[in-house]
Figure 1 (spheres, helix red, strand yellow):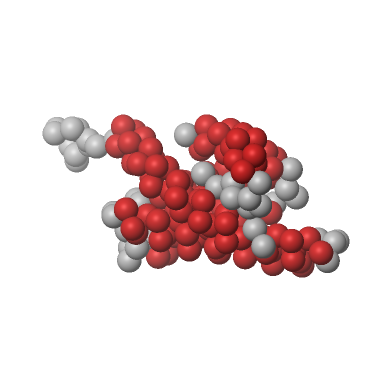
Figure 2: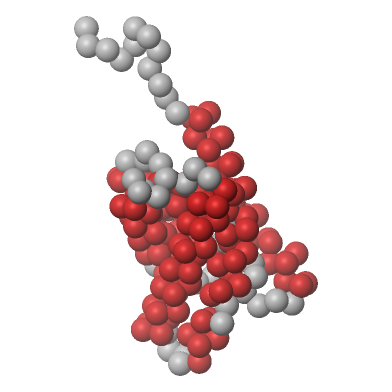
Length: 167
């Protein structure tokens, strides 16, 4: 599902770019990473999957290798730490979680670009894109959460009666 979201996300710019609103292209991967963090995924499995998806996002976006890899793993760990308190159950909670995490992601991109980038103007230009990106990500987050929940329900392994018990 993560790879499919990356493919859709990488092609959304072509459709949404015609609106001529800078930064309005949403992140479809971010709500999935937050979903994994606030649900019952193990730290090792979730961090490894976040690492892989972040690395693929670096490749798809043409970003410096490691930028989104670091951000997705960090997002997963922070969502996991806050997951007990922020279980995304309602529509508004999903919107709020996606908006806040998209803002954090955007700020991290600006900070890391300012620290490691060679162009002093790039972080300023990126900072202007953070708010529209966070809003568009929040708008599509409930859809991604719903898809992730369906995949989670289909793939969850629950032992049947008589299975998995001590013998």
